[in-house]
Length: 512
Image (cartoon, rainbow, N blue to C red; front, side, top):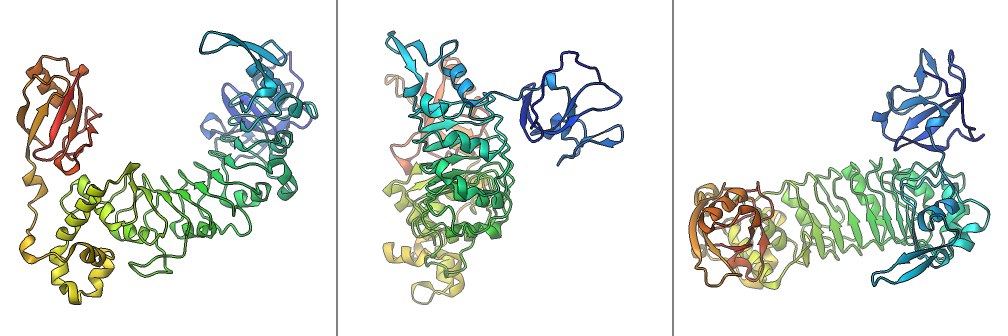
């Protein structure tokens, strides 16, 4: 290790401060000598532990400790930056060499002046902000700000944040992602600094749920909270805090499934994101199959994408939510007997009678009717074996809580209507596909029999040979008689016709 003869001055309160070095951020854990070298060293714990070399020890001496075995490094002060204050960062970002105004050219080519006191949004992501600057200067310089982005900055604690926000009287939205913030001793004493805050984003801040609840008294009017990709594993009841929340995102945290119901205490919650939480089960024990739960009374939108849900009984549990109208559950393990992804969509629609949007697409009335009728037929044989309309057994109604309401809506299936479905694999080895050319009405449609395993890239290759139009210029969509008026884009070259659920008789639209 060498010595830098032009060693910069290190702040007296450096330990605990945030620094940046070569594009990475870290927290200072040690300031002092490292014998036998001369001069000052900083011991830092990196946000990204892969950036480090050790656990805070060097040559057998423990200078500081780290959470990760190789999360620490010893660096010279000259290699790090302690950042700049808010006032300096705003001037640098919005004014350049000017003080409070900067000329710019608008969309119509006219020269205009940007005045800091007219800014409604201040975006200082990755700007090195470490604190407020001169007392009272923020209120004078940017008095109109409603949205502030301080993500990936060098603020060290909530007190730093509070000293900035208390001067922004109109602040409603605050982005603080990818920071490491030390907690305050009395969070409630800082609530005036966040008195009008409605939206708070704290993604990737290495927070636990108890730490979030501890800080929550600071945010008395909060409506939207995003705490994605944190260190949240078990949820506790938010008693007395966060009761104004309407939207909560916990995406990217591996959650204990038994603790999810703790946030049901948020009676105003309308939107909940539980994607990428490794969720495999969700149960509402206060209600029986087919009835409504008292939990999550206001929940309208639920995201469950990229989880481990494989049991249809979980979907039946979701049907207990009284206000649920939007659900997204892409990339789970739900399968149908025929192995067709489209059938999975139909089953979700049929089992969730109040749903209006599924996987971010609106459910049209004809689509719902088709799904519910197919559901009746699909399980009609089981229904008849279980006793039929007049004496169906409890085991069937537990497995299909909505079936009897559909029988009342459409009538019971009769034995003559039911036929066993063919094996999906055998039925769909070859598909008859009709290619049409909506932008070239004089060109006649082409019919071909194609294997279900054929990928889009090969389909374009076939069309190139037929049309003499380069495959790279071709854009393909398809329509199905089951969903008239809707086009589905074939947008992945390496996905098969089976992946897109194309069936015999579907029509592929070819444009270029």
